[in-house]
Image (cartoon, rainbow, N blue to C red; front, top):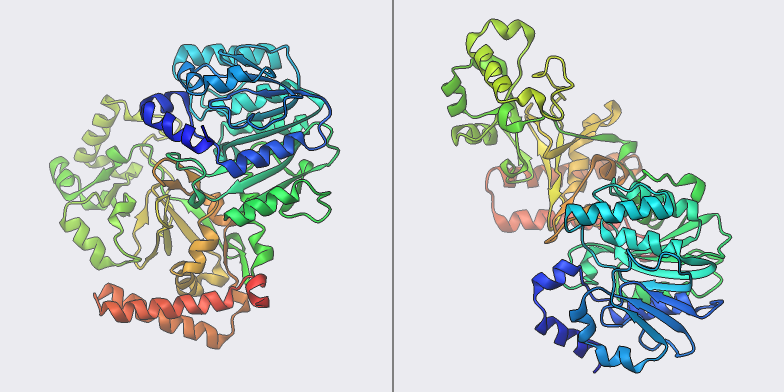
Length: 534
């Protein structure tokens, strides 16, 4: 049976629950071929390993002259292609858990699409973490995904001249639990390339995450890792051809190992190449600082609506106006009219802000006592504060950005003095650029901004993406210093009309027309050098 037919048959015969339990996502044909080409290219030796063989796609078509050890603990998926495994004398099939078995074996080549799942239970977690402490002297985070364990154990079993290829989700490149993984990769010194794909390519059915191909060569003498970003099938083919060349002219971004830190967000390196590809851009931190909103430690406790304020009879002087969640922002402009409407709807728009001098107010004292009774003062962020009910307060930010997004990043121009909580990120401009906030907001409303700024997110399921301040600070924005006064005025004029039509529910066609003019301006001004040459 052809690979695609075999996959479809297995998908039809196995439940989604079963596949999720084993973290099964099938490798696209082009990627499988690419990984095989890397591992077999100039390979010294004939012993190969696939630690999570599944239906056998990654070892199919490998010549019989290679001896292949293949592992998988899911008998159901192995039975779906049992004829293939039994017909290949060169394949030794182990129906066991690779993470537990065969620690003393070594291989010349390893190719793997490991399962994408967290630890299933506490017992499993303890078994695996103990094995890695005993065999590799590595202490891993309890949040580590199993695919990262497959990488580490496989590299531990790779011969000094060996080559390996993995296809994995890219979240460990940014996640806190990935620090130990990246520390090992830097120490191991065999990682040559990371080829990343944007989420829109959809390499894995049912898995809404960006993926990376990790390519290793133990005989590697390079002091750098190359970060290659791909956004289309054509760019994947280009990377596949490039990896088999002498690679004297880099396709991606080269980063010296000594300049990479295990705790750093490595995914940013894929997108910093845009600064070389596009003209008239700079990282946001050249003009502003992106910061998380106020972290109270318990929004449920510290946020009030009018009803709750009346219930406790606490005076208005003890509150700051606030935006407590991103869902309260419905369009790109937040005004005092919007704030008052939300207050009237009894939304939580008030933030308790108690000073020592306020403690003469008996209603406030009673509420704080109730907080202590319910152990609010013992919560994680709160227990180290003195007094426990005081938290750092930021000024209102001129531009707000939603932390969680789906289709695109949500930017909002804050026309008020209302603070924001930690579901939002605030953009605070340096003093010399404060007067240009509207111009930057105009850029944030453009398609070009979404293209250049939407990449370094952390992805969750169902297209949900999380944005961190560090991601924003490194994102590329309009280099306002390149604009003439006439161009600034043109942008302000278009932006002003968009704001007016949005706030006053103006004609929709006129609004779309002005958005198109704004898009045209930034598309022409922030061109890639490739576009400029056409």
